[in-house]
Image (cartoon, rainbow, N blue to C red):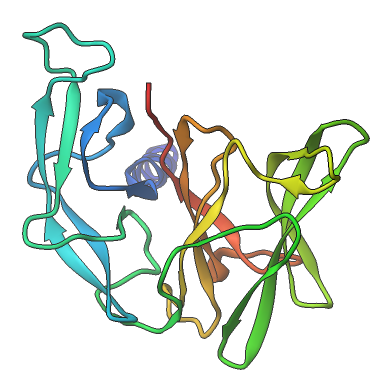
Length: 231
């Protein structure tokens, strides 16, 4: 009995350890080496957006070592170039069981910046969610939260910062978060969001929020993210 129980525990532990980790990655020419989770030859799902239409399609990555202009010497190559041959994906995704290749219903195809003064409406399947920036503070520097709501339930997605001008206008000047894509990536009939959740001018932080992973009290849930610094 102990042997059987031990084998069952080992099998469960192995299955848990082998569970894929959700990953997200952009393509580009000069990433720092530690920012790139993928390797040449791996197959990822590429979100390709063209003419207002979107698809998820498998692609085999080509990743090369390149000179990192920030920290490398002339003969060093600690940087990484990430290419999905033949396509220009909005984002690359892997390890997310609810995603599969095929056409994707689109709510917002073109990237849209967030504005501290006006919520960004995202309409999909007859339902509108508003993505707004809520700020508080009495000085010039303000702490803000990005909130997703439908008029009944609100959810805080992430924190950011803003400044108040001499005229009293609140602006996301140093770093402007933006919606990179909105659509039904996991095909559950609800909208999913790809947002650059940056809070610094030298940082890009594409983040995937899926409705299918949401818990009670949520519209979407944080699933995967990549942090990219300039210098």
